[in-house]
Structures are given as structure tokens and as C-alpha cells.
Amino acid sequence: MSEDVTGTSAGAAVSDVIVVGGGVIGLTTAMVLARRGHRVRVWSAAPAAATTSAVAGALWWPYRIEPQDSVGDWSLTSLRWYEELAARPQETGVRLVDGLHRGERLASLGPWAGQLNGAVETAEGLRCRLPLLDMPVHLEWLEGRVGAAGGAVERRTVVSFDEAAAEAATVVNCTGLGARELVPDSGVRPVRGQLVLVENPGIEEWYTEADPASSETTYFFPQPGRLVLGGTAGADDWGTVPDPRTAQEIVARCARVRPEIAGARVIGHRVGLRPARDAGVRIEAEALPGGGRLVHNYGHGGAGVTVAVGCAQAAARLVG
Image (cartoon, rainbow, N blue to C red; front, side, top):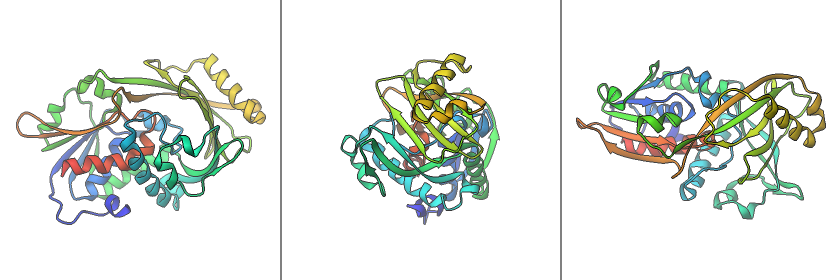
């Protein structure tokens, strides 16, 4: 797998590609393309640290993402990549951390679950050792990998894909929620997630407890310098301002699992709008006026980190 990500494909034609979108999907796609020999530029309206990806709790897990017949392969490809990156956590932002998916059972998951190394069912749920990403560090690392492979990341607001098509033979749409207006695709919707950051009172393992039918979840992720508490999944909620009452409820839910969280000092609040899509992830190509090509890679919801590499490879195959 890693050869496909990090190595240049034999015989790959060098061509100009502009990737629109600088979150984890856009940067990972740009990295894969650049390392395959394409001249890549990333156009992003905001720095990586200001994207939705930077807010993510970022535990690898294929949660609330479609289509199921593709998600398993995308996720496992990404998992193996992150397992390699975890050998250099300070550089890549990727660590392998133990934790519990409360109430989860292998039989309720897809065939991909059989490929998890060391997953154990207990009375409480499923215990696993999974990649947990410190997203600000990982996004900075991705930008560095794009640059090292000869690509460039540029700050640019795009109002039409025609702008990029005027400068490159191929445009890759990794705009996330922005695809709703740019494509346009009315099936793209925000799923609002709110997080609370607290000083870590000594918790070393992650924990999740989620009901897919509910807009409330309970999870905590130990990240360097902080413990990330969550969360919410408010469909069609465009609000980006943290709600104090919601924050209190998040802390209370997490404290019912680990009481020491109740006394942890709050050091920050975050809100991110996950870019969900009614029909699931869209990876396909279409012709642009003038002979160019537009390759779509969007609609990953809250699982962009989980499928980033697998989807990047799928998009890269369409670029050629």
C-alpha cells in the first residue's frame, strides 16, 4: 500500500493538477498525486489550521459514511498508512492508542472489521488499538509532504471550477461543504460537531459511545496537551459558535464515564461542520468545457480522516 502513496508510479504522465480544498482530503489527495509525478497546486481559501479538518477529534473509525461497499477498502488502506506513520508521532501527528468502543460488536460491523489487528470483544464493547491523529500537526505534515514532492499550497478563494480549469488540465474537487454551492450539489449538508478541550486529568485511553440515531455522542480522546471531549452530530445545523449549555452537557456525559473529567479545567471550545452528503462519498470524473477534467472527491462527513488515503488513491486513478 505505501508504495502507492509514497512512490511515483512507473510511467505516470506528468500533468498539471489543481486540487481545490486544503483540508485533510485535499492535502492527502495532493500528496498522492504529487508523488505520482503530477505538478500539483492546492488552492485553499483558509490555512489548514482553520479548516474543519483541524477541529476533528480524529480517531480512525468508519462512522456514518457511505457507500458501505467502498468504505471498508478506503478505510483499511488509510489504516495501514497511519500505522506506518505512527512510528514518527511527533513528526506526523499520528499515534496508535488503546481504547473502547462501548456497546460495539464485531458482528455488527462490515467485513473490514475482520482486518483489525488485536480487536477484542469484552462485556463493555470492543477494545482496539487505533490511530489517533493530532490534526494540526498532521495537516502541517501533509502540507510539508506536498511541498517536498514538488507541489505548492496557495491561499485562494474559488467561486467557480472554471478558474482552476483555466490554469490546469485537471481539477480535483476536495471542497467538502463548499461543494454544495460550487458543484452545485444540494445533497451536501453540514453535520455540526461541538467539542470541549480540557486539561487532561491523566486519561491515556480513548472512549466512544455512539447511537447513530442520536445527535448526541459521548467520547474523549487524549491528545498532546489536552483531552478532547465530545460531542454532537446536528444535521443541517450551520451554527459555528459554541453553545455553553451544549458544552456543559458534553462534559457531564464524559464525566459519567470518567468522573475526574468533571474537575478538569476547560481550555477551549471548538465547532466544526462535517461535510456530509445524502448519497455518500462522491468520487467520479466529468468533462469540463474546453477539454479539461473535473474529478470529485467530497462528501466524507465526519470520517474524512478515516478514508483520506483510500479516497485519495481512488481519485488519483481517475486523474490518470
